[in-house]
Image (cartoon, rainbow, N blue to C red; front, top):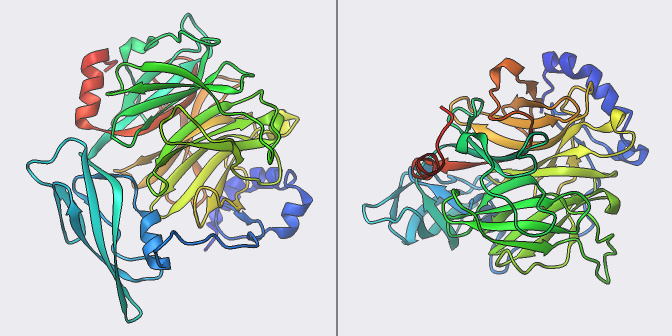
Length: 429
């Protein structure tokens, strides 16, 4: 993987800044693998086992399939080893032609489907069915969940949307969508995500030093119900925890496990952790999410096809020297992060709260983040989070939705979903 010379000149100072921060053990084990200056930790001693009944090729397909497909979307044409894949629909109101999945006339807005794959390569052919898939309409934009650090409605959920991923419009005139009724009532770091059935849920930090997170359900993103506090930071016989912090929670549905993955940060416990849940009410005991060799927080996981990336903040003290963002990469899944970049931020300020969106028309990926000491909303862009360095997006190219926008998150939405939000809450266009 080549290193881009002009990007190296641009990032030279901040790369040198970041190299000074890497632990000696990590530097000794590091292996340069990409233009992002990725460093690789030693591989785990035992390889992850394949899902029961699946070959390596079929397991690759299993991971490459996202739980939410789009009408008119293209399915994977071959595996990572080059085996060809031919698709048909086993269940659901949809068809596949030339690898493109399309809803039929009687399909629901959220159409459950089961896909059948014929995988051919190296003189062998196998077949496999893949379920826990939902076929949606095409995405048209993103909806952002965020909060304000200042003002009359600070630390409350606010929503915004975008069509072009850089110009954000406020919903509900920039006012809070609701006020929490339990706990500290301080809703920080809100992250909206899609549930298995296509509806939504929201997780958020409960103030600062609390072991529980807020969770709400939402059928359409306009109203939020069933408020509950779930303690995710808990001790077990195998993992002793402070039972004090659960910062910046995010969550996603894992179709292979048929479960939700809730991940969060605890500086007091040394990093990031995750719980699993089948119903977003009862959760497993926490487990460590990753270990780059030092404390990290505010991680946001982003999947592109088969591969996973995570963008996170270096939380070592003093923050004036270390509070930069960097990328972790996994060649397996969201539990296999073992390759880490140098800083992707400039080293001149302190940064946190990243989230990731794709610019479909541009073909690149934006990483948004907070310059939290200056209350600035910033972004970098890259054409490949796994192999390409990011460039900083000029500040005048970003239109934030509200003043003092803090620790946001965003998910892609369909035209029907966005219109429901705009009609119910009003727009800032």
